Length: 355
Image 1: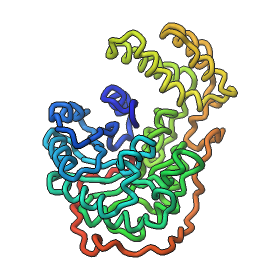
Image 2: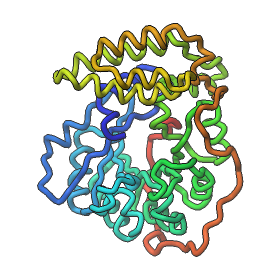
Image 3: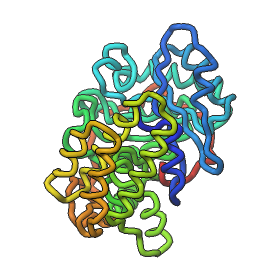
């Protein structure tokens, strides 16, 4: 998640139980000369938590060099972004735009495979403007030697509208041999685990829902262990925000920088507050860190847990989740990609289920 998953925020999230892998924001790789020092700086690891470094580009040689650099610097996983839906990425032919050309993504991934002795992955969307070629795309990725694939089952043209169609995740899982990780709209811990089981995928990657509920990974781990999942109340949420605010203020030396970072997080946490978004509106109008602190203390800290939509079951249902269905998705005119006839998949040691 661009602008969010920097080393500081990854560290904060990793302090709670249940997190299997942390991921960097994507690093743009162009045809300009690669500055290895900048790439190595992305590899900031947290003891005991594997790190995935995501790179985005479409030049096979440059992507291979970048992948080799971050792998040698200690990245546990090197990931290629094949899902970014922004206009800029599309204009430059990277991110989700590469889904239009399975031959190109096969070439790029194969070149990366040659430089990455460890784990290599790809994060994709369901397609550009339809899902017709999703199987060919996945098979090309598998044939190129990726260890696993992460699927966000929306089209590029969907951006983040609507609800992710996890039937696409299930369909791919039944057709390829490498692990398939599902991603998209897993807003609540228990429904996410139900979805993983129903779709029979190998794991779950969670992005935006973890900004909205920083306890979601802990809740999932507790459910798996047959423990009672934590249900944060206002005091816990306020303490989390104050802690994060203090770290931002200590790390960011531009006076206005912590305000912007906090408002970004508050924009997500505020969605879980059942107050017709009153807290959200007031916090986003704040002019200083001190004003944000006062708003948190007066509007969030006193709230009971039942007024906050962070219950593991999603009792308030302020967010819309994918249907928990095992229906098959049909794909018309899908044929095996020629690059996928013989796959040389490198087996990964990473088998954790929360990414």
